[in-house]
Image 1 (cartoon, rainbow, N blue to C red):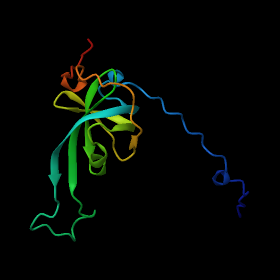
Image 2: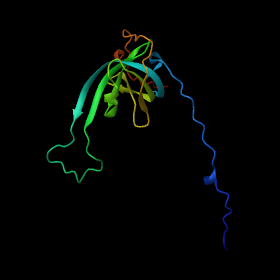
Image 3: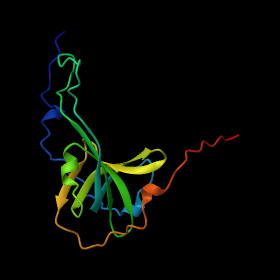
Image 4: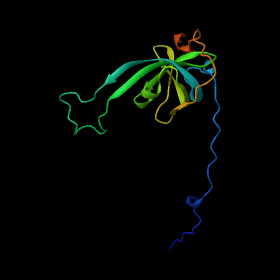
Length: 156
């Protein structure tokens, strides 16, 4: 027996998927373990904590699956009119995080480092420099100074 394809496939659907409008939140609304945040923040300070060159002697470039490029990491204090938090900038993000700049962080997530919150944007997110904001950063409420502890609750 032969089967006949009907030609009505779902792959030919030409309707565009509607994108969600971003919901901008304030820094004081960030909670541990959350992601998908969109924020407008000002950069208060930026400090490079790691700049590595992956060309170590004795390493064969033939064995590596990805190209060699230097890794740069900077810890930047960013904030808005409600609070501040440490943002971990990686590679190209480091160049955008100059003190005084206003940036939009899209699809940001909260990472926990030694019990404190750090804001980060991975490869699915975006860091955009935008026009200067009018708000004054509230530097006396640093959310990264709050230490969290994971507590396991056992139900009996």
